[in-house]
Length: 415
Ligand SMILES: Cc1cc2nc3c(=O)[nH]c(=O)nc-3n(C[C@H](O)[C@H](O)[C@H](O)COP(=O)(O)OP(=O)(O)OC[C@H]3O[C@@H](n4cnc5c(N)ncnc54)[C@H](O)[C@@H]3O)c2cc1C
Image 1: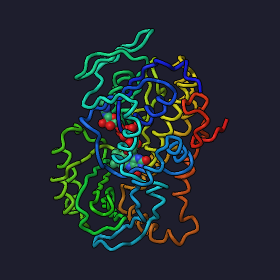
Image 2: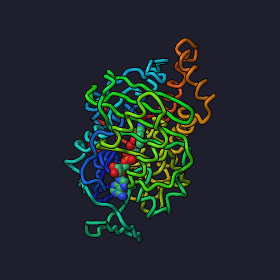
Image 3: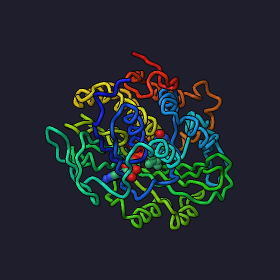
Image 4: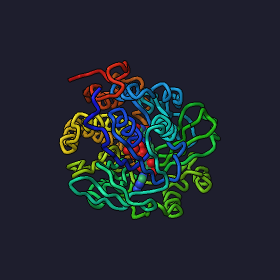
């Protein structure tokens, strides 16, 4: 145990979803003082399902001591069926492809992370950073509501539309790359009686799906459609819903009924499916983490694991470098770049395959899924996803851990 070099280093983390609290967890173990500021007035509950796969993800969860809690909250989803217009299943895709080793609702994961960190982390809800002003000694941060404060370091873990990134690196358009697809998701009644499963219906340029959640007591409705980037304000829900209705009205299967449900949804989400590409993830005393820095897209199935691994690496490098934050940020990038690039490659591929623009490709793909279980390469996609998720050798930072090598759950040292 050696935390003398990190004692009294204060870190502001913007964002309390996955990456932010995971970073707070590790920084605490290395002796840093952390504050997490979250724009939402409280933890956001529920949401869509996210997943972990492979040893890199699981070993970080284990090292944090939360793997058991995550497993207890798992969705337990089985295979997903592609259906025809009448709702008749045509092809089944294995659970491994969608749900990885452990699938959990994003909100449940955020709650577990918050509970694990709240005793030693200052959480400020309902506020946002408005300016960052750096000098040789630290960063002065102003907030929408709270009084200005000083921190040694600031980490933006505030998602694809990161405010921290905008303030420290410049406008979003420079870094966020639209993948040609928009996505909407909301909670609805499980009126199809789906039992730990999902149904998806694909036509040219469109995919609409429903999957059961919270052990079949509710369902999530998901819409994807191909289109150039739409000029829609993220707060204009009525306009977003109008666009979705235009895209999917008369589309077949459950589309019309789900569009009706959409009007009453408690948690309507709409966004472009996009990636964040940056040449550098840090500037001075400010660094980015998770979707804010290297979002692989909501379709990649990789973003949550990547955010978690990123938090482990960033915290570890900050601990190892003591007060040399520049050195730590450079090591963080060199350790994680290739891994993040692999996850983004997955996102690119899936976006093209999930919602193909032409009718011919959509039909061929639907037919392919039908025969896939009988083909030799049937589990190829799941294997690629697993290989991508495992494509990193985690360094062992336990020398700086206040729990020290006594904690048997830490990731195994790998050089
Ligand atoms: C529809 C959908 C489906 C997905 N499916 C999967 C999946 O199957 N598997 C998978 O692994 N991943 C999936 N993802 C991606 C996954 O959710 C993200 O990659 C992951 O949550 C990244 O975590 P993060 O903490 O970096 O960012 P986020 O989860 O985006 O969290 C950012 C946080 O910052 C907060 N914030 C924003 N602005 C500010 C501000 N100005 N000040 C303070 N706080 C702020 C937000 O409220 C939020 O709490 C999906 C995403 C979406 C949208």
